[in-house]
Structures are given as structure tokens and as C-alpha cells.
Length: 192
Image (cartoon, rainbow, N blue to C red; front, side, top):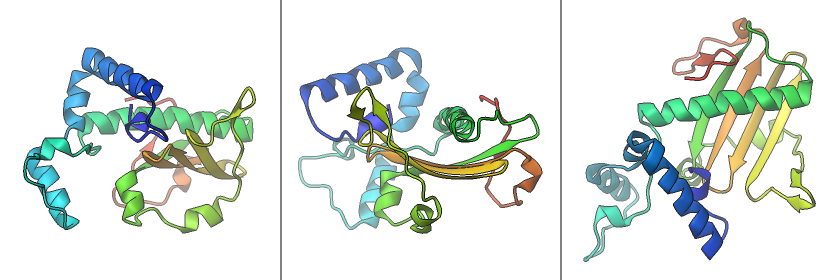
């Protein structure tokens, strides 16, 4: 759903796919959908911080914004990130992360990208950029990632369309993670 919130093109099929994903949230996870919707004061504060006025005749609900910092969305992103980075670690290291390992995850939104909050050094540090294909079709517009892998550790920068990105750091020995404020190390297989 999050990746479809910023489509690469606005076609009838893309709109239908987004509507289907949205209906799935309505049917199965209405609390998550409610949490994704920012409050009017949140939107006003966001717009003011960027010098944007709400034009006459519009309300804050007319701005297509989502918020990703609530507890339910955070749990969903964490569960997805643990699975994704476990799979990528396995793909590039041919090893399952052992029970002694851990995964740290950081979500970046497209607003973070616009604000320059994604460290530019990531691209240089994470040099490998695999080409993803389904049959003969490149998936780079939908999903792309860079990575670096060493013995027992790996790091990934993954982007989903222009909607959001994630950084994942995997250590097969969780004791290698430095103690940093705000960084949570998740055990492999841990789905919240």
C-alpha cells in the first residue's frame, strides 16, 4: 500500500491497483488505515513548515499526505523489514541469520528524501546495485536496492517507487551492533 501511494505513472490500471490495496486495508486493517491518515493539525503544521498555505476552497484533507510514525504502522513496517532484510541477507550470503543475529531497520519517506534526510554517503558505501527482472521486464521503477555484504554482516538500502525507502543492517552476531539511542535490533524471524 505504501509503495503504491506514489505511483510512477497515473494510469487506470495503477489507480485500480491502488484502490484494491486501499480496500484491502479498509477490510482487514482499518486501524492501520486510520493511523496512516494524518490529523488536520498535523497537516497544517507540516504545510506551514514548508511555507504552503491552504488555498481557499480546500481543506487539509485535500492534501495527499500519509503519516508513518504511529505504533501500528511501525509494527507493520518492522515486520515487513525483518522479512525483507532476512531474505536479502540469505540471497547474498547463502546463510540464514542465526538466532544470535539481529536486524536494525530505518524507514525513510519521500518527504525525508526531499528534505535531504537520507544520508548521501549510502549510495557510495553500498556500491552493488543488482538489476531485478521479472521475465524480461526490469523492476527498477518499482523496487531497487543497493547492498554491501561482508562475512556475517550486510547492509541494504531499498527503495520502493518514489514513495519510501528502508535501510537494513544485518549482523549474524547481534552483539556487534553498537548501542545507539533510538535503534532497535530485532531478532531474525521476529514478526511483531
